[in-house]
Length: 240
Ligand code: NAD
Image (cartoon, rainbow, N blue to C red):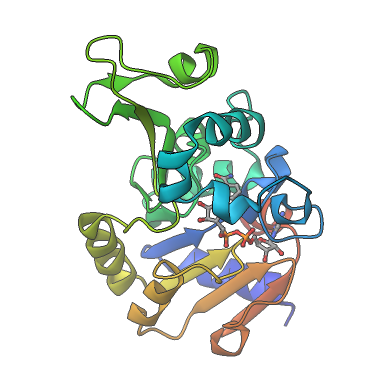
């Protein structure tokens, strides 16, 4: 049986689907991922992106950080693609329990998904590091240079998890619980290279682990079903 046909059957029979995804879910919305051929890590900057996106770099050179961040991390007008839309539809139909994402773009919510765990935070939320006052993303976009708190002058930081920072324990716990409840675990558009997010898959004990990715991943051998392809196209085909 063709892999997409097998997936269609599993999806049809289940009302405990959980989705776990990464940057590849948003490439069809024209947001580049990190590690693909045209990904962010293949481009040239005076500093490697992993360094710019680290907490210590942010604290030392917030000016360079924000230049890079505004230029390469904010895609505020991006629209959900077929993957986001199909997942939201399955949740609405009571088939999908929730989405766990490593993405920071908010596209699952834009598509209508309600139960979304954002392991790496979101560009849509920002706060003053000193007085915790929240700021909208437009404030970041429009500020000249480094955005500073209008109340106390503190440095404003996006609520995204930078390298060297820990993921929120609460999010990791919720994600682990969700995966523990999954009958069908769909994993897509992630290189499964970033821990501890990728380690969450170990909490799945079922036998319907589906990996949908354009490239290979280090966990391919664990999958019960492996689909090479664009996730938006694949999910649209499965949901049709
Ligand atoms: P990654 O760049 O390491 O891997 C992306 C994977 O998706 C690759 O294996 C690639 O082959 C695959 N892929 C690309 N387009 C695809 C498509 N259309 N269909 C199926 N597969 C596709 O990304 P990652 O694993 O998510 O981890 C990197 C980090 O990137 C995360 O921490 C995340 O926070 C951050 N990030 C987020 C965004 C975003 O919010 N949209 C964008 C870039 C990076």
